[in-house]
Length: 409
Image (cartoon, rainbow, N blue to C red):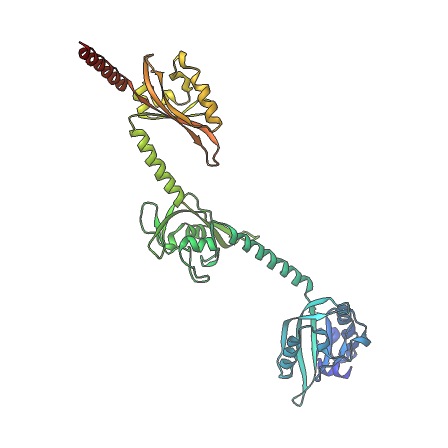
């Protein structure tokens, strides 16, 4: 224990342990029964002393541990070589992460705090405190695994997602975000948004520090229902709906934010197509009516209003059978049966009834209506007034009859 006494200088400030009493301090007990693992290693790397906590940590009896080279217990040779080299140069080591192999073959994750004892410039031994951080490292590993899992989930999502710190600096973005923005954001440098340039929905340029993400961070609140338009570096534009949401720690302190960008390009195109189709339907001279499989009218254009005399408010929600005369009521069930089976209904001529009770000859074209999954949910009907056509046909027949009569005479 002479080396141990030489290697330790203990300063006592407590009057109860000072002066003559300090000479009676039990260094042997302090070394052997301390709660922290401690060992002494000679300049040649041979273990000189090890306390009970050290032996318990690795599961060795003293005779199988003391006297061996310290490197025998390090599965990572380069780690112990680095530690010994630093100590031999007089460096102090604090909380150096390392791994030790226990007697049963298990690996202990530890943090090493060590310094050398020198005499006349020559290394006599090193004293090393070993803190077992195996449970802490296991928790860190689990957190890394969870983080990796979350990142894999985010990377696999088809929607753009990115995060920032509390100052708005981007800390993460997924592949969908880069693809949508048309650029690779600079993590740790770019602020507020992953996009190149921003504009409001009405086309006004929007500074990045005034974007919804910036507002969410500055005011520490989620921002919703604020559509915007972004420009990519290649000059193309896309509309999107952001969902910036602040992130808080367990004490409610702001630590960052996450944002999801919903690309509205397809929705905008669909809306434009719908409006275009609606304009065509509304401007059509023919009556265009849609109904569900229970005969209930769902849409009614101006052509239908002109032909049948009912306004859209009067017709929508009513059964289409109100347009069918009593002697043609059997047509509708047959049509619906074929529509439900997905069969094609050939155009045909028939008679329908106006609001005022008058009858009108029409040519009907019927097509199935399908939902987004392809399921038939109704039918659309185009009814064309063929009164003039029938009158012309009647005049032609009369003219041909007159011609034939004159030829015979």
